[in-house]
Image 1 (cartoon, rainbow, N blue to C red):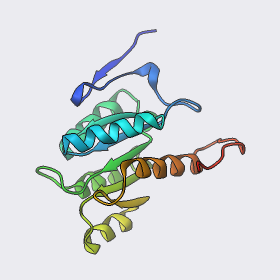
Image 2: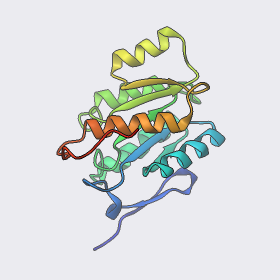
Image 3: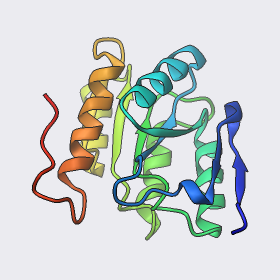
Image 4: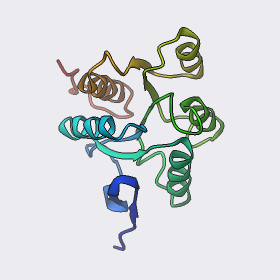
Length: 167
């Protein structure tokens, strides 16, 4: 079997053999420009059994998703999107708008994790379909990851009844 390797920013590597299937790790696309915070988030995701891919800008995230789409890995590989609002050049809402316009991407759940706590901004994300909005400075990353995990468990297709909520 030929492995298709893809190298992402920050040297994250994935192969086609790692694609998410039932019982395998879920993958979160983390769109976050603060490098130290990104490293912390990746560490918490790994501790809770997630794979991660990351982008530091909207254009980088869209390029990554487009590349994955052309090799038929999305949405199988990306199970959720963690998006910051304040990003270089373009804000996270531009990424969300692009996700919602694409037939393959629009079903990927997204979660706002940002210092943007103004009602106007968070309301935009809620209206766009954000599964949840988190204040980055007051919500520990491990709690955010646990909430994303819970959401994915509750909305998985074909999950047996024996799957329980984490406590």
